[in-house]
Each structure stands twice: as C-alpha cells, then as structure tokens.
Figure 1: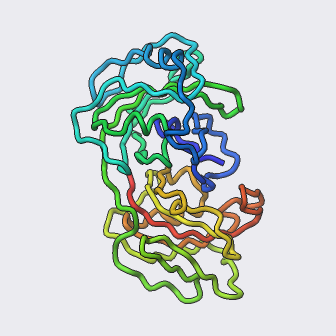
Figure 2: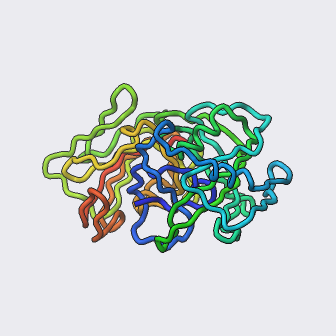
Figure 3: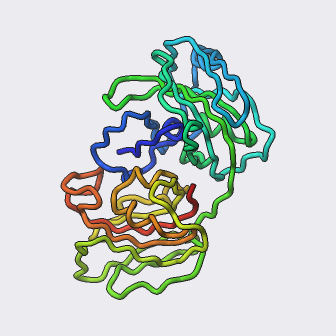
Amino acid sequence: MKIRITGAAAAVVVSAALVLSGCGSDDASPSASPSASASASEAPTPTAEDVAAVESVEVSGDAGKAPTVKFTAPLTVSTATVHVVSDGDGAEFEDGQSLTIHSVVYSGADASQLGDTYADDSAESVLLNENVIIPQLYEALSGKHVGARFVFANPTQDASGNAVTYVTVGEVTDARTVPTRAEGEAVTPAEGLPTVTLDDSGKPSIEIPEGYEAPDELVVQPLIKGSGPEVAADQTVTVQYSGWLLDGTQFDSSWERGAPTSFGLDQVIQGWTDGLAGQTVGSQVLLVVPADQAYGDQASGTIPANSPLIFVVDILDAQ
C-alpha cells in the first residue's frame, strides 16, 4: 500500500513501507511506484528518446511563482527521467535535508494540468535521501542549490490501474536540515504500557507486558517532549518510526530503512492523525492503536485483519 500524495511528492517519493496509509483510498492523484530497495546505481537508464522527451518540455516564468509549461502530447517515457532546467542560486543541498518543493503536475497523455501547489501554497516536503526519493531525482538534485527547477516524467499507474505518464515541473524553494531523532525532555510513561528502550542511535525496541491487552481507545503516551511547535492535523511531518503487532512482531521501521520519511497527517491511519496532531516537533510518542483506528477488518501486508498496533514515533519536523 502507498500513501497518496499530491503534487511533487507524489511523483518523487519512493514507496517505502508506507503501511500507514488508509485502505481503499479513492484519491486519483499520481503515486510513486519504484521499490524502496532501488538505488541510483540500480535504476533503469533512460533512453535517448526518454531524455529528448523530457528536455522538450519548455519551462518559463519567474522564480517562486507557478511556471508556464509547454510540451507536445502525448509525452511518454520508458522509465523515470529527470532534466534539471536551471540550478538555483541559493544554498547547496546537503544529503538528508528536507527539500520544500512547489510543483505543477500534468498528464503526459493530453498535457492537462492535474495539480498546482503554488495555487494554495501547499508545497511538499521531500527528503533528499537515496532510500526515500526516486533514484534518478536523487542523482539529479544532489549538489544543486535552492531555487533549482526540474522536469520529471514518471511512467506509473493511475487510480484505475491504467498506464500513465505524469510530468512534474518542480522548484525547490527551501532546504532544511532536520534532526535524526527526537530531542527534548524525557517523560515518565504511565504504568502498564509497553516499555520502550532506545539504542545509541535512538532506534527503539519494545517489551510488551505479559497479558497486555489492547485498549478500546487510542493510547497516546509522549516519551520525549520536544520544544518545537505543535503539529497540526493538516501538516506534512517528517518522522522516524517503528511499528509492532501486539505479540511483539515488528512489521515496519524507518530505522531499518536508514532514513526518516515524510507524509501528510491527513494521509495516514486515523490513530496516527489523532495521536500526533497536537504533539510538538522534537517529541517521541508511543501510540497503541485499536484495530478500528488502524486497518479494521482488512489485512495490510503482514498486518492481519483486526490487529491493534503499537508505534514509537519520533517527530522530527512539520510543515
């Protein structure tokens, strides 16, 4: 399963574990398709025809504003293909930074516009990490600068499963360094909850008390209280997290993938939306999520139907 993300992030984010997205989404926005195990060196090489197609996209207009985009439809590519239209004159990107990307997205089939983050100031946050974004884009943006504009064409599937090519014209408007783990004041948890232990890097493990039964209501237990701003339910957050079944089986972990991940809090299971909204950036939170606020009676990957879930989440950033 994949988180449905609008704008640039839909085109560039690699589907990592992303088991947090709700089931049965009807969102028709483009979504990422490459495997998170792909690396820049393993990514398919665009053909000369792919490169020519992407370079034919004309981009003009003032920086910081929605560009004027022209191309001849249909535009198709055989694999993800990137062309940096212009580098920026701001700070150079550093690996692992959170890039703020404004974008306009078009259908390659008929050049119709599908999305515009400039219109409602809904820029996406994307981590410049080879385990997180499309390898071709990671390679293209590495070493570039704030203000860079790029064209990215990606063959994928729409919500109906039809083959489509999405053409994204993106502009990196900011690059920020985010911490790799929660930082703040330790909080003593309530008795009887799963016990969380951190290794030297901050990676969590848990011990579940014998006979522990999942509560009927969502449990939200801060373990570290960060000093940053409160997170709103409509924000995009950057987090490190691990998730377990009630028997202690780990089913997902950004720590195992070697990089945090970013997504909108309105694009995840209800337990995450309700549990993280109102927490502060820099915090670490233990969530015990009843099945009806997770996946209910539907299985998701290795998560059986009707499963309560346990998460430890480090909130690193929110935009």
